[in-house]
Structures are given as structure tokens and as C-alpha cells.
View (cartoon, rainbow, N blue to C red):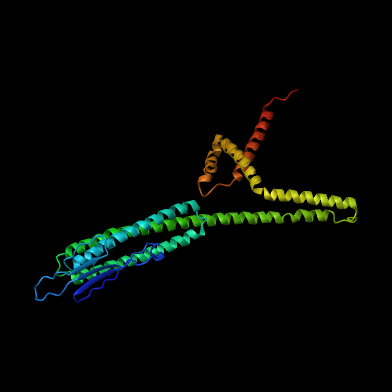
Length: 329
């Protein structure tokens, strides 16, 4: 905001906010320079009231001012309206950013740069708003000593400071929240990429094992007469069968692992239920049952130990039964 006051008989004020469209202010549409022409001749004698001869204004809400402070209030009202429009524009942009962010789910690399630029623009707006307040406060302090409109101008400035300052604070909280959400999405995306990378490395490892069966087959047929047709055909057929089987297992390793994991889970649940029925193993069964909800889990070998103990007790029971039976003559 620029304020220019002529100390002669022609007094004028010019306000710019901003005077052209700029991406620096979120693409806020510019307006022509706001100018008031106010011609007041100097009084011929001391104490004589100044009567304006000419008053022209490009503002929407205007009245013929009584003095400099009354004139400046018109600019403060226009300034407050422009700030309200700008805050509403930024708020709508952030709402759109939130919608785009939820749709992208952290997969858009442009979203982080977009939010960072918006945060920088919002910081520039905060600095511009502080400059407006400082300039307005200094002008009222310099020109409002003998004006009866000084109190109303100060109240208007305080209203501008409280309401627009509060809106800017809310917008800053919104952009911080959007950045935190984007950081969380980015962390989740990086975790997924790391998991996929680990799976690909594991797949490549199993694919590399493909050459081990081939080497084994080659060692089997590293005997004389390899050039004979029967031996050569057997070598080719065995190599192809072993290689294809290895590749099929490697490419379906996740499905195979899921199948075995499901079977193991069913078997595990059944054994844990049997452990609950045994008083001596009930505590261990509770630990195994709750192992999925805690960080520390007991060894899965407890299941094998329990089965072995059950087998030993069963064998002992059978021996005791045989000993207790009467021998036939």
C-alpha cells in the first residue's frame, strides 16, 4: 500500500493492492489504481474552515470527507474488502488442494511442490498484511491528532487487524495440516516402494537360483557320450522341465507362501486350542494367542514341543496300560 499526501492545497491518496494480476497472490485479479482527487484550498485566515472545491473518487463506497482521516477511512474499508476477497480465494484453493490430495493418495509428486509454493505465497501475504497495518497505523498517528474521526479510524484498523489476521492464521493452520498429510502420504508411498523393491530383490534371488538346477543337470550329464542323441535329448528335456518348474515356483512364490501360511494358521489355531485344554500349557497358549497383538512373541517351537510332549504322554499311557493288563497263561 502506498500513501502519498501533498502538503500543498491539493491532497491525494493512492492505494495499490495489487495493481495487476500476479501468481504471487494466488492469481488474485488486479484492479486499477485507486485514486481520490480532493482539492482543498488553504484558508485565507487562521481558524477558517477549509471547504473542498473538487472531489473525485474511483472507490465504490465513498462520501465527501471532512478531513484527511475521514478520507483515509474510505481506503481502509476498501482495503478490508479486498483482503476478505483474497482470503476467500485462498480458502477455496486450499479446499481444492485437499480434494486433489485425497484423490492422489500421495502418488502425485507435484502436490508437495504445489503446497510448498502456496505456503510461501501465504507467508508473503502475511508480510504484506503487516506492511498495510504499519503504514495505516503510522498515517493515523501522524494525521489524526486534530481529527474527530481518529477513534473510528483506529477501530476500523483494529477490526481489520483482528478479523483478517484471524483468517490468515486459519489459512496458515490449513496449509500446515495439508503439508503434514502430504508428508504422511509420502512416507506411506516410500514404505510401499521399499516393500515392492524387497519383493523384487527376492524374486531376482529366486530367479538366479534357476541356474543352480541347470548346473546340477549339467553335472549329471557331464559324462562321456554326451554327444549321443539319447543322452543329449534327456539332458535338454530335464533342463527344460527343471528350469520351467523353478521359474513357476519363483513367480508364484507369494501365492505359494500365502497358501502355506493359511494352512499353517489353521493348524496353529487347532494346536493352541488343544494347549488351552491342558492346564500345564494354558499360560503358554495365552501367550501364543496374544502374540499377534504384542511386539514380543513366544517361539513357535513351543507348538512342536507341545506336540512332542503329547506324543510322549500318549506313549507312556499306552505302556502303562499294557503293564496293567493281566498276562494270559
